[in-house]
Length: 197
Ligand SMILES: Nc1nc2c(ncn2[C@@H]2O[C@H](COP(=O)(O)OP(=O)(O)OP(=O)(O)O)[C@@H](O)[C@H]2O)c(=O)[nH]1
Ligand SMILES: [Mg+2]
Image 1 (cartoon, protein in one colour):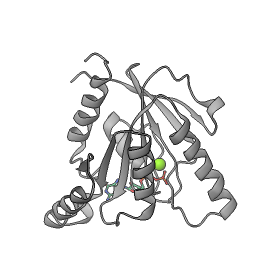
Image 2 (cartoon, helix red, strand yellow):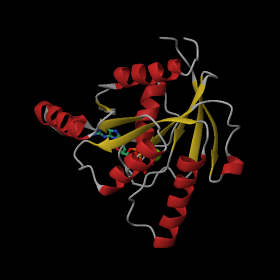
Image 3 (cartoon, protein in one colour):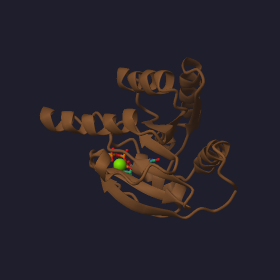
Image 4 (spheres, protein in one colour):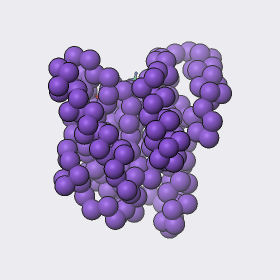
């Protein structure tokens, strides 16, 4: 696999702040605190996205260049309860505008804390973006270090059964497990778009 350097491009809240739509984008989405930014850092081999133990760390849509060939997009997490309703609605609009309107969005990585249940929020995203918009989905169950090996494997099997046409992967950013596999899978998807290795 070719090594691609990942670099921060810019942050945006609205379409007029996005970079040009000339390259494919892979967006990381999921509940706040699931580890989206951590996973992105781990896939990039260095710390480029902001990470924090306080939920709601990523407040803007962050665009990263991957070797000049495609982009990673780190989205703010949803489900962060301790914000005002108005603030939450603004955030949701910002994320939805990107997810439903961005024409060069090619794939989604839905990051979940492996200990959390699949909820209506995830199902709604899966149905509307996966089935209706036709975007390929990869679900990553992160923080496997928080469960025993057996319990983590079980969670993965259970979730895979319920999701058709969707890859379910698992990872621990802390223990650096599962990262290589996710990287290979994403690269395979990108190669299918005609980007050379
Ligand atoms: N134990 C453990 N902690 C993790 C793992 N991945 C991330 N974390 C921690 O979880 C917290 C949240 O990580 P972030 O990467 O900021 O989560 P996020 O999904 O980007 O959160 P928002 O930006 O708020 O949406 C941080 O304290 C991380 O260090 C993991 O695999 N295992
Ligand atoms: Mg984040």
